[in-house]
Image (cartoon, rainbow, N blue to C red; front, side, top):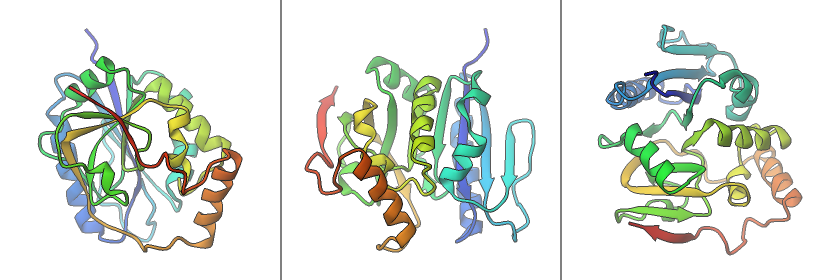
Length: 235
């Protein structure tokens, strides 16, 4: 029997702290390798630092693309759903997110299917929104997940990619604020992933403009009381 295929996408890899991120990537792939008996796992990594020699080698399971750009540009250009129809699942993860040692793709798939999620994420320690890291255990149905680590099947990735294209989203700012309209989302509190590197607290003009364009078209406000909210807790 053929194993389901999972595409793990790191949509931006490079400075700052390139050495740390390379070690983090190695640790994450080691954790995911624990599910290699259940899935065929492929990696697609975008290294945006062209002045650095790539320290990641291409092989049959890993493809590295090295060129300038930002997250949304890479997803829009290189991770088109039609090019990955043979993959059952897509895992999008940032280069500075550390998966917990107890993380399991097999269990994530089981939770994803059992509760009919469209997008599923581990809890994130050191998120911009503390509610994403509750500290308790279980599974939550939520209406917001900040973009750190998204697991979804191919069909929901296709819908997600449509939003990226619709808004020509380069930085992905604001896109996570409207996902509740289109997807059933969940967080697994038993998995506490860690977000290591934080940027400035203020956004530049380009990112702010991108976010506000999305919110204005969706007739939403960043201060809308629906954010953030846990809808229910699952046993």
